[in-house]
Length: 330
Ligand code: UT7
Image 1 (cartoon, helix red, strand yellow):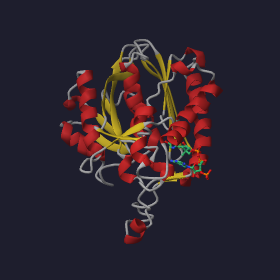
Image 2: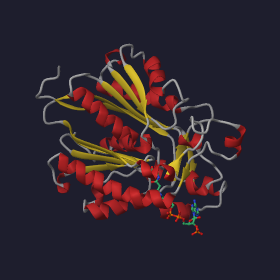
Image 3: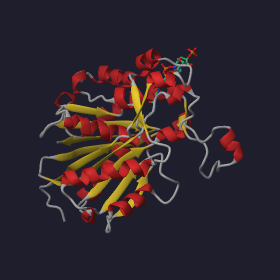
């Protein structure tokens, strides 16, 4: 059992970003859009794409190895692996089981978690609870997506937004006063149709018709999602900071889901937190879905926006709609 005095936090992190860069100028040649439109409306300049022969687990595995290496914990010691993804290698088995095999994490349980772009923070919150309750010691949480494989590359309203990537965090015991201090999750399935991939499940199994109608690609009502996203980012940040017993002004770094710069700017205005406290990297990667928040967290640490003792808020939202936030002391 964990000592009551210790906390639960991140012991190590890793990321994996595909080598191929797709710039806005490249997309200009594919659909009727412009670098100017994309930058002005989203803040995105380029994104990374997996190769045709790569799948989500090919990104998740190096990220997982990086997290274990940084933590100095061996794969055999890991109790549980959670892969947050919307783009598993296949519907089953879970991508987490493929990672368990390839890591040689012989005693770990493994499953995928489906909460779209909110997936990493959902999984982190769950991992925290399993360790805090004394069930497990080390839980590997991975946020990985290859949404480029599910894009309609003729639909300019979606194909400019997303990119591929993976990030991983190993959670385990940390000294008292450090680590996760509050978590929050929420959902509102009334908005399910606003952002979805309609076919490929049991409702609309794959058929010639579903392929012809491009129902295996991302469909989004951008305006509706945008409005909800701002509300969620603001509320989910406020709620979790309050649960942590802190004020918004106590937070040193906010790591938001990187969907659209204008969503983040609207949240900054409403929250009244100084913009320099927000970690932004969507200019370089676009929206990497479940990988978005974890890669931004990793880079915030690399850039020393987060240092030992920093109070960090993670906040994410995505299809479902589903959202999750968390406050931790680094
Ligand atoms: O992880 C969660 C997932 N998603 C999100 O958070 C996305 C939330 N939504 C958004 O980020 C924004 O709604 C978008 C970036 C998707 C769209 O921006 P917008 O400012 O809401 O544009 P809009 O959809 O209202 O479209 C404005 C115009 C339309 O033309 P008309 O009807 O005014 O003539 C669109 O057809 O912009 C047009 N448009 C484009 N033009 C050039 C839409 N996409 C493009 C494009 N290039 N790529």
